[in-house]
Amino acid sequence: MRRAAARASALLAALLLAACATLPPPEAAGDVLGGRLAVRVDAGADTPARSESATFELRGDAQRGRLDLSTPLGSMVAQARWEPAAVRLVTPQGERRFADLDALTREVLGESVPVAALFDWLRGRPWPGAPSMAAPGGFEQLGWQVDVSQQREGTVQAHRLSQPVVTVQVRLDLP
Image (cartoon, rainbow, N blue to C red; front, side):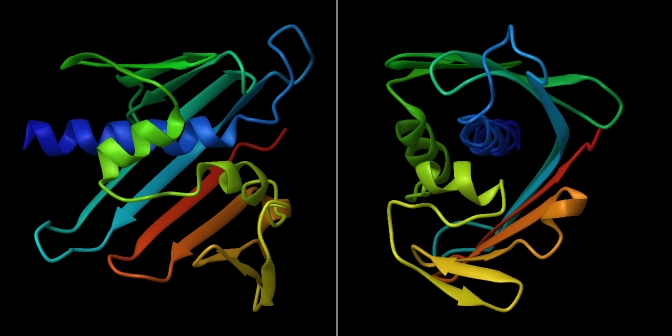
C-alpha cells in the first residue's frame, strides 16, 4: 500500500513538474502557481486501477524550480526540485533522483507520458511539436484528448485514449 502511494505521489510530481515549464523565474512576478491535481490510471493487464489527488504549489521555471505536493489538510506528500540534468523527488519514503522528467514518468507510471506537451496543454493550447486535431472542447494530440473548454476557469483535463486510460485533471487557483 505504501509503495502504491509513493508511486502515485511521484506520478503527481512528474505531471505537476511538467506544468511549470513556462513559469517565470522565481524573482519575477507571478512566480507561484497553485491549485489541485487529480490523476487516475485505469487498471491494466497486470496493475490495479489507482488514483491520487493533491494540492500543489510550483515555483521556478523549466530549468530550476520546486514543486510541493500536499494533502487537502496541508500535510506535505512530496517535494520535487529540478535543475539541468537532475530531478529529485523527496517523499516520506526517502529521496530518489532522475535524469529528467521523462525518466521520472516512465519509472513511476511504467508508460510514456508526453511531458513536453503537458506544458502547453495546461495553458489551453496544443503543443507545437506534434500535429493536433480539433475535438469537442479542445483537441487531440499524441494519442490524448485534451479538454480545454474550462481553461479560463482554471480547469484542464487530458485523457489518454489508449489502454490503460490515464486521466489528468488540473484545477488552478485563479488570482
